[in-house]
Image 1 (cartoon, one colour):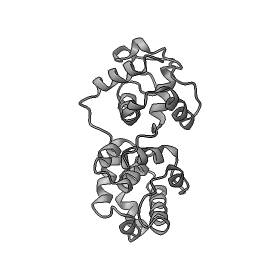
Image 2 (image 1 turned 45 degrees about the horizontal axis):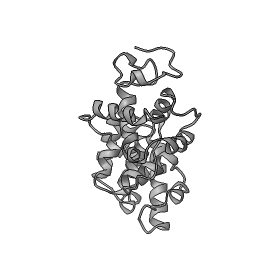
Image 3 (image 1 turned 135 degrees about the vertical axis):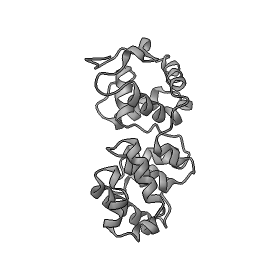
Length: 216
């Protein structure tokens, strides 16, 4: 596990000039609510679709109050490009309602309270904490982080929530903030889910390629 800093450093150099995912760019303004909504929009869709849907929505409404004023059909139309727009519209409406009515319009800064809101899972809550509130106390773990950490042999887990807990035991804390962003970029460009590009991977000599049946 002493190779972890080296691996993270090499991946960081590889993607130093890469464009950050939409959720990270949204979080640069330190608006937990917009970070939260952008993350909900990002579920099961490509980043370019998240960017389009987020931009469309936030031009019209970017607070719980403003979102709740939108008819559901209008909300669906605004976020259509994100995919699964009907379900996402209902989730965003519900989350906005709870935040407005139970938390005076402010996203709760406690991860457990945030996860109590229906529609918000561990990954979304962690992203909101780390990037929306600038609280790097967690390692947001999506399918990319989960898959890559297992391929590298850092963990041996079945689901992302387990992976996060195990990574927090072995990854030096100074890397927690950037790990999600780096692994998402790495997972989209090189360490893809099917037939990863191992031949051009910057960390191939540190990777046992666990679970990889075919590569390029």
